[in-house]
Length: 110
Length: 111
Image (cartoon, rainbow over all chains, first blue to last red):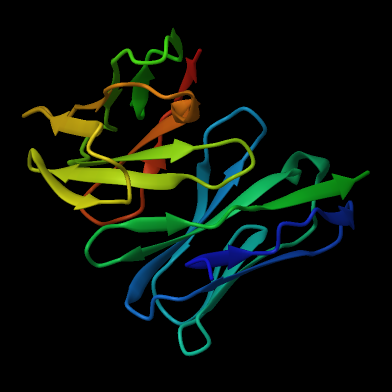
């Protein structure tokens, strides 16, 4: 079992819809949770981080964390074609090591 | 603010050679982490440097070594290159254990 699991996709949604990306992790000692967006051939770009259970909203993005279920999600509202990318979930322990999932590829169709 | 900068952007090396990659962290950041990303996979943690010491290390052989300088910049060294070392090498900087920001990466090709 991988330490951080994501649906590989591809996930396809129409423009204007809500895209839902999911991530589960195995280390209960994980303290920090991040979502990165990576366009093809580019480096990952941080879009959201969350440290506490519950929801965190930033513009069209909402991160949700449930430590009891070891589950993190990212919702993208009003999806745009420019949101088409691979979304990486990353989980960090207090020791500082970050573990990434292999990413979910999202395609937003006009 | 220049953000995290890495050099070089692309590199071609021959199997068995040694390579050094460089990273300058974002202003105000004191922690540098290195990752290897193969095509179609997520970044794999190599190691993290803080206060010029290796704080954490992933499952990489000793051929992979690093250094952090007093100005927080960092180097990744890989000895005895293998074809399988071909990948995108990413540097990320942070203030302590806070959220990390990536540089543009170095694409290493071993032939």
